[in-house]
Length: 58
Image (cartoon, rainbow, N blue to C red; front, side, top):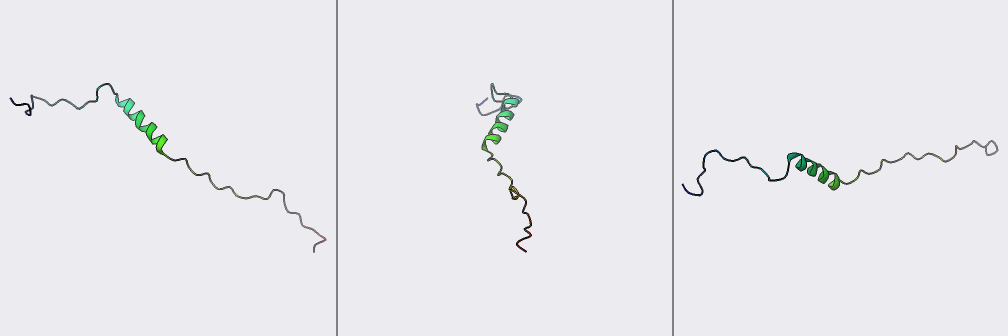
């Protein structure tokens, strides 16, 4: 049998020493780090004090 021929069932692909949970957590952490922060929402400008009507101006 040559080195390129398969010997029975193929072995499932696995990364030695890394669990699926670790891979998923690493992906979530990378997404959080690489996502820019949201821009602050614009605030509506409110006057500092209410404008009083001046009777003398009229």
